[in-house]
Length: 499
Image 1: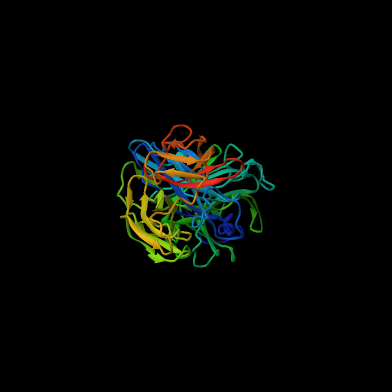
Image 2: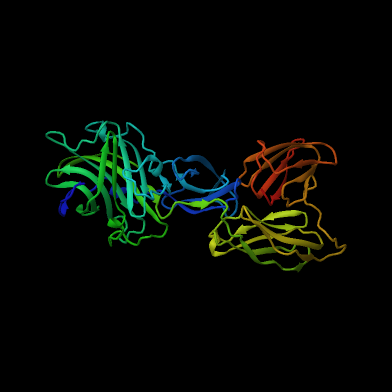
């Protein structure tokens, strides 16, 4: 650990900090379904571009069933449905018991928004399994470096209750600080917040350097417009081969008035790394920097398998309850879940058809109103019932009815899909599909084909046992059966209620 240093005015300031508030994606609404022992958990995450035009995005999920010792990586798939335009989803199997940790990382091709593992024991230096990738940093992109040690090759970040941890690697075997007669080398991980009261004026940095008489290893703050720099605290650092670890107490910078409120609006720090050569006060050169990461360090998502409180649905209604043909009916119900679990099934069953409902927001612990407007009901009485499933518990409202007025009133509305039908629907473990023959592709709610079935040309139809092509039981939720006979496509929505 290095100490000492005074307030200075240096042109060099801190490497990278002016770019900390550059465009980077943001994460929101990271929720999972209830963890049924031996079942599957569904995870949703919203990814936004908050600065600049939208860009292509991808998202990945990392989950651990061995107390964060190892992580399994999964691709997340965009849902592309109303109310879920920015939502990515995936699912993974859970064991029969124990704790499961997971985190989400989004990539907009240039920068990341990432959660990370949690370093509960303040392990120093942190092992790789307790760090998250900070940026896609290619090898060989340094600009006029004095040596390969100025070529960043990777960057990682992690957190504990009290500390921010960083790791950067270079294209060398050590981290030189001085080369006779010049230059000095400065290695920085910059930290900021989108809610800084003075915008992008100030930035903080964990810096490893030894510019004799001017600049030493520690935590600093820089004003990007006046180039005023102050060393405000110590850091821990450790150089091992091409790895440079640095950490400092998070409160050392979040408690400063220049940093602004903490926790901030979304619990994210803006973090990036950079390297510079320093020759004189008027002659210095930044050789390599990473893109900025939105780093979420206010809690790593986790759950205890089998732990769950059943959700509650209430105030189910249809408005109006009576109307002429062509009336637009509003189906509406409130969903409350004290565990903040997302419902894998959120629907209203009307006669033999299941209609998916859309949420007013996705903070499930705050109470969400799900609704849908629907027209096209035939004259007659129609029975309806709201059906929700959080992955472990299915809840329904009592059967109710509404009426479409007109001549020749029918007691029940026939299926709107004559080419493909299912009974029962919703179903628990098994349903039977009826159609005109052809191939059926069953897709999950994010459009991925999970089961392929050949539909015979006979009245008996074909059974589906709610399993995928590998024989694994699929989680409760909305599925779509696509029948494609003779070049024409017919789709039926199915609601699976149980594992």
